[in-house]
Image (cartoon, rainbow, N blue to C red; front, top):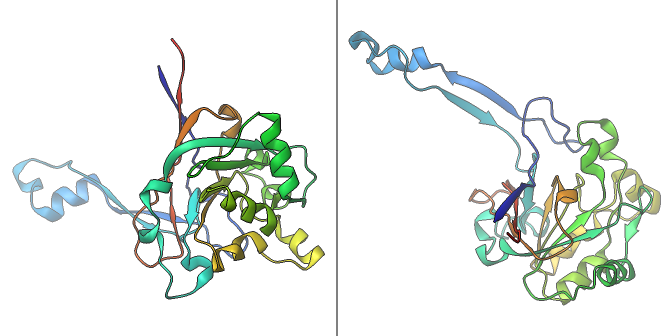
Length: 241
C-alpha cells in the first residue's frame, strides 16, 4: 500500500517567513456572484459561478526550492532550469535534532548520521536534513532555533552524487545570528556559485518518514527567471501489506 506524507508548509497571510521576506497576500479578486454578473451569465439565472484569487508572494515563501540564480547571478537559470530527474528520487532523512542551535553540520556529522542508519549514498538521492525546527514553524523561534549545513558538508553530499537536498528549517545554513557570530554568511548557499545543486527549505513532517527506503517528489513551479519557486513536496512510502 502506498502512503503519502505531505512535506510542505501551509502558505497563508500570517505565516512565519525568513527575515526581509514579505509574507504572502492571498486576495479574493472576484467572488462567485461577481464573476457570474461580470461575464453576463447572471441575467440568464446563473448567479453563482466560479471565484478567483490574486496571489502575491515572493519566490522564497513556504516550502520552496532555491534555483542557481539565487546565488550565481542574473545569467544563471531560475526554477525553469532545475532538471526534473533530480526532483523525484530515493529519499534519505539524516537526523540532527541533537545538535545545538546555531551549529554547523560537518562532513563527519553527515558520515556519522549515515552510519547510524546503515546507508550508503548513491547518485540522485534526495537528502533531507532534519533539525526539528518544523515542530515550531509558527513561532518566532523557528528563525533562530535550528542547526544548518556548512559548505564542507554540502560539498560532501555533492561529491556522492547528491544534487537535491533540503531542510525542515527556514534556511539551509545555520540561523542568521550564528552566521554573524562566526562571520560566515550563507556558506552552504554559496556552494551554488561553483556547483550545480539545489536545496529545499521549510519542509515539514520529516519525523513521519523512515530514514530511507522511500521516494521523494519535489517538483517546483516552472517560474521563469526567478531565484526560487514553491514546491509541493511529498514523501512516498510503500508499506508492506
